[in-house]
Length: 254
Image (cartoon, rainbow, N blue to C red):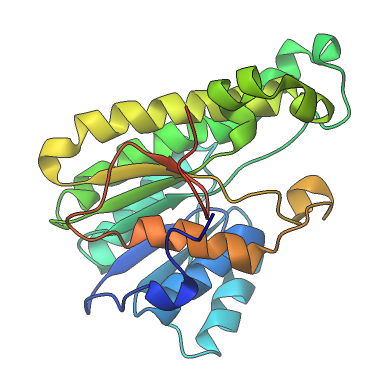
């Protein structure tokens, strides 16, 4: 199956486009920030660690990208509010939000041995963090006129894929992580419906099995490749879809 959109198909963004990527100091988040920046966006490098965020923003700046470090811990409501306030004061609006920050804490732990505490810790970032950031940024996104939200999900959270291919996914049954992505998918659908009249398109991206710190660099794809899929959804035109779950090559069942 061919790519839905190739790297060369991504269009230059209008001047003044402001994009926030959470967890952008490394991995898919960093490469997405790089790709959006290369298309002309002012990129806000959301990072929990202030120093790592500054280092990542400096690296992007060295490539000619207009990048700014933004201290943002998605699990800390005060941090989220402060980030939204800074964006409002400095840029006045937000055009693109990529909810990339995520954790995988139960790799190798049998499903029946996952504790409630581990589940809570996973949801705190992967689900509640996405809600906290989206809620705080919606007023700024509404000022854009054509805002886009992309949630970084996984086919491991697809009920359709899990029910259709249980044998293939047997080695990847992680109760906390997979169910958190299923919850994020549900949020994607609900936000898409709620924000449709505002012209805000909300989609979920399946980056693929990518080698990142999240999985101990065991993936077969690269963060750079995954960033193309994410960016494609972040720069959709007015005729682009909303409420979809897409990989590089296809639509993923919810």
